[in-house]
Length: 170
Image (tube, rainbow, N blue to C red; front, side, top):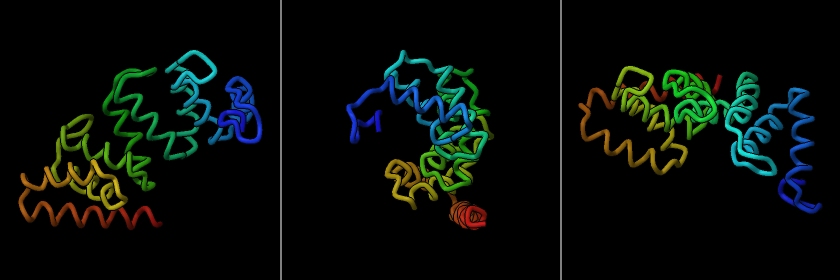
């Protein structure tokens, strides 16, 4: 409420106080919000290391938004060492829970061989999953990739995407 000024005067410092209290008690939602406030410098100086700390706590609880954010921080080397493999690890965890941004970034990682062995089939499968959720950049990337793929590779990627979707539902 304080962060957005809903029903009260907007006050980032007050929001930080409440987020921190809940975050220290293990609330993943508060940990994500606290991490975001440190990352964006809302009511406090920007501190990427502190942001990564709070994202990691929520990510380790299985929150896909935190997993994606932590993956992105590793991919860009903000607040944590630049580490494509670590980024892929966190993207994959979020992607397997259906996060379209993580699916897109994982697809790009496979397409470029960042943190994984370059693999067009894996890339297409993850881009297909993100595109199926309306991710526009994934649609474009998928269409660009298909021009360099054999029909058998496309079929294999479509089967892989269905298998991933079935695992998500379990």
